[in-house]
Image (cartoon, rainbow, N blue to C red):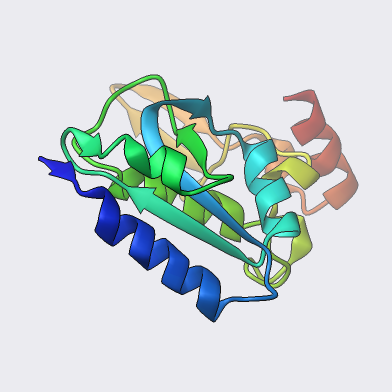
Amino acid sequence: MVLEARPIVRAVEKIKRQTRGKKCQVIILSPAGKQFTNLEAARWAKDYDHLILIAGRYEGIDARVRRLIPGAREVSVGPYVLTGGELPAMVIIDAAARHIPGVLGDDESLEERRPASREVYTRPEVIIHRGRRYRVPKVLLSGHHQKIGQWRKRR
């Protein structure tokens, strides 16, 4: 299945008319596109009022769409191929939305702005598995935020 060019182009033109005066970026999702990054997500969230995502299915979209929509960017979310662009669209929405002030509730929730280790723990403090004890590091139980922060930086 290949999505036809005319309905896609008409839809994008209508969206652009409705958002006149707003900064829009059209993104065509394609495994052949430029690799999407978190830096790009942050920039798009800051620079654009609207992202228009064009997600193909199976074989994709008519190649003429790229020529008929000036300024459209072709983007890939990874070095793999999926059956459609719906999941990559959700990845881009989630990655960009995290950078919009207020979406996460607290600016410190952005992992890239706070020290974080890849190690996180839950309860109980000790898990016994096959005769071995696995403990939560004592510093995390201390309540001493400065020491916890230092521990995370080291990790």
